[in-house]
Every structure is written in C-alpha cells, then in structure tokens.
Image (cartoon, rainbow, N blue to C red; front, side):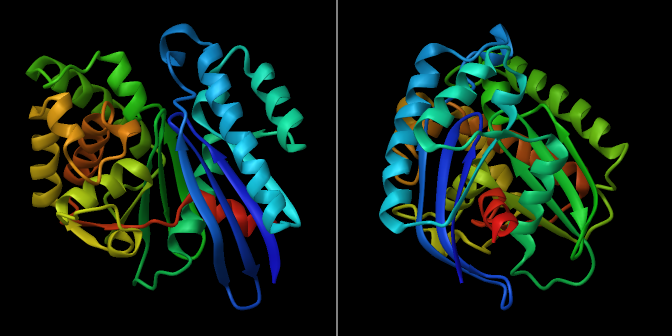
Amino acid sequence: MTRVAAIDCGTNSIRLLVADADPATGELVDLDRRMTIVRLGQGVDRTGRLAPEALERTFAACREYAAVIEEFGAERLRFVATSASRDAENRDAFVQGVLDILGVEPEVITGDQEAEFSFTGATRELHADGDYLVVDIGGGSTEFVVGSRQVRAARSVDVGCVRMTERHHLSDPATPEQIAAIRADVEAALDLAERTVPLREPRTLVGLAGSVTTVAAIALDLDAYDSAAIHHSRISHDEVKRVTERLLASTHEERTAIPVLHPGRIDVIAAGALVLLAVMERTGALEVVVSEHDILDGIAWSIA
C-alpha cells in the first residue's frame, strides 16, 4: 500500500482524497475525502482573472487540507488544477499561494489530461460490455471520454454549471430565453466534441461530478446526501428531465429547501442539470450510471 493525497481544484470546488492505494490489487481505500465550495472561477469568464476573494477562499481550504494531509502522513501529494486556473491571466498568484501552503505546485492540466484522470477514476470498478462514455460536468468545462479499459477519444469543452450560470445571468426561476441560450451553447459544444469523440456509440453513459451526483440525489428523493446510495445508481432520462425542469422552474428559496443540495451549488445546479439533460438527449442515453469516483480517484492512481 502507498498512502497518497490527491487534490482536485476546479472552477466551483476544491476536493481532497487521502487514500491507501494498492496497484497490485487495484484497491483504493479512502481515509479522508472532503469537498469545499470555493468558487475559484468567480467572474473568470467575464474578466479573465481570478478574483482576490476567490483566491483567499481557495487558500483557506488549502490550509485546512494541509493539516489533514499531515495528520494522515501521506507519502505523496499531487495537486491538479483545472478549467478556471487554466483560463486566468493571473494564475501565477494562484500557483505561488498553493506552493507556499502545501509545498507543491498545482499542475494546471490540459482538458485531455483532465479527461483521462476522470475516465480512470470512474471506470476502474465498472465491468460493462463495450465502451463507456464518461461525462464529467464541472464548473467551467465538461469532459467527454470514450473508451473501455483505455481512453480511445477525449474532448474538453467550455460549458459548465458556473460558466453557463454567469454567462447567461440565470435568474430564479430561469426564463425561456435563458434556457434557450444555454441549450444553444451546450449544443454547439456537443457539436465540437462530436468531431473527435463518438458520443453516440457507447452503450453505457457514466456521469461524474457535483451536478450529476446532486441530480441523482434529488431523483432518488434522499433525505440527506448519501454517497453510498448515489454511487453506481442508475437515473433514467425521464427522471433527469423531471429534476432539471423542477430546478429551472424553482426559486432560490425553493432550491435552498432541497435537503441534498449543498449551499454552494444552489445558484448553479439548474445549469448543470441542463447540461446533463442535453448530453442524454444528444446521445440517446436512456439512463446515466452515476459515479462518486472521478478525477480525484484518477489523480490518486496516477501517483500510486
């Protein structure tokens, strides 16, 4: 066993996994898995820069994670940063802040690398026939990956729950014009992805990240967020459509009252659900297999 720590810093959240990994058996045993909403990508689509308050929220989470990593005595640490920090003009301030706190530089990975980590984390436990289509809906981008045991094709596109919410000033409830504008952006992104990724070929659609797991939790009518109940659940297209329409038609107060909805996702979940629905309609998927294991697990395996 090798004790590893993996950090995934995205547009909306930063997450930590400390685990014991055994490459010989393919076993990854969680010791600590946590997530903090920091909204690092606040305003990046508009300004091209990371906001000072967003950086400070992120650094505060890094200080908390540093204490956890030290407590468990992880031998290796890898910090991966994705869409927001990839796009920002002032990403040097982000890199230096992380280095000062954690002693490692964040790796601002490409969309293709992000896709490969997501695929590894999501499919290592699955045993379906044929190829998977893994869809990782993040805050700033969405990754599409097709493969069986290995990645065959991948593409990252710039549609995510935070980016779509901010770009189209999504209101409470959403207007038909806003919904149509987001759908147009997502359809254009799907056209782009389909140039290199055969989205309609795989028989198994696997959905990752907070937008997908939250939609699943709502569809399952859980009283509280339960990772065990959500992991490998199968949510039908009709259920995804029902939840998406409910979220788009709801007010901020109505979404706040949903027990499984994390406070940091209240403003962006409707856009994330709409991305998932559009993907299912484009691919013809009758259901999505929901995975709680994703890019974070892939990062852990990469250093094990």
